[in-house]
Image 1 (cartoon, rainbow over the protein chains, first blue to last red):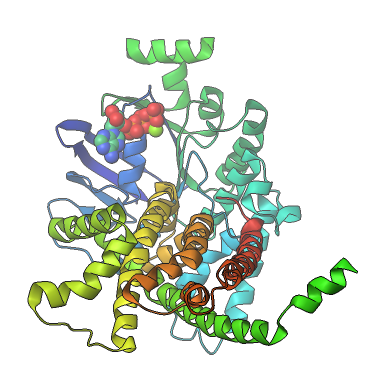
Image 2 (cartoon, chains in turn cyan, orange):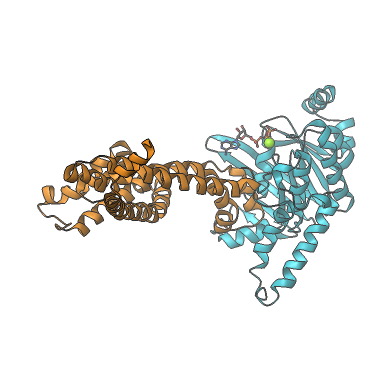
Length: 261
Length: 232
Ligand SMILES: Nc1ncnc2c1ncn2[C@@H]1O[C@H](COP(=O)(O)OP(=O)(O)OP(=O)(O)O)[C@@H](O)[C@H]1O
Ligand SMILES: [Mg+2]
């Protein structure tokens, strides 16, 4: 069974139709790269999947459970939406770390707030907190930041901040982790460390959707690529299909253009 | 020799009497100062949320209020709030005693400062990047968790300097209440010109204001330092 199915997703901002019917599905462990030129709805697609925007049409299904169906106009409560959200994680282009928390605090905060709702939280507070902290330390170790636990975001480089953001998203154990151009706010010499982390997540079978302009990364790490053009998926396939034998002239030009840079 | 004769001329009895009297006025000034902050800091937040409301009429009412209050002198507001009910409604709510005048003064001050604070709050809240809210949302936080655990401290850090400026202004603005005959520090000082023909008590009130605003400046600086551990 597919871990994620997106069916006929449409989104308009007023008159402007940004997504014109997006369909795709992912299996567990798939890494899907989303490529395409600026303004073609890549960010909007991720925002819809993460419930930051409400699609006008379409369905989002995770592990067979319909999380969103535009034709079902029931008003989901805030806590319902939160539960649905937790299937996904999102890593932003500009990190959006919480400046007043340390690296460790950033990774622990959301999980702590979530665990407070457990009925046994009061009795087992100490133990639950210790577990959350141990988990956070482990994640930060995985992204190579064990020596920065007590640093504040402004004391870190962009690449380090983005790795904290990845650990923060992983702390909630999402089924699918989404990245919106995770390296495009970074100096070129810092992109490598972030891409390495994403690659190691891919190796550990994490299901991911990565919007990126890093073509070599898309080619090496993704097993599936969609090329978005004017709110539609113009072409999809394996990296070989897209990079070696693109069916559309536009895809060929885009890849050639980026490759030339 | 000169110094000796200078001190010999000082009337220590009079100085003690003047300082005792000025102290009483200063306590009144402090009362106005702290009560104004106590009322206007929270009321300002209500007005700030009002002027960001999705409901048009609430938003416009609050914006109108802020415009009128910030666009007119506090002295005029004091006079209107104190004399207005008597003149316009033919009914002096405030009675004739000192308590009524004091309450009227406090209402004017709290309203005035709340409007200034509301604009500072609004700027602080609207200045928090959208990404902070969205990061909280995708991490499954509730709206109130996002406000209290993510946004609030950042807002506080941003608004401490401008709030501090208003607080220092308030120290000196307390002297305005004398237009409706609420007796505070400067009133006491000025009284000595009329009653005893000496001007130094009036000038000496400046020392009180300076010392108090100096202390506040130190406190505000300390508070800003406390927030230095992160950047927004
Ligand atoms: N909240 C919004 N209101 C109105 N228009 C929007 C909004 N968000 C996005 N758009 C518009 O939707 C279109 C697609 O934007 P989107 O950010 O999804 O593109 P993108 O493919 O991510 O581009 P880029 O590569 O530059 O990040 C753009 O024309 C954009 O101006
Ligand atoms: Mg984008």
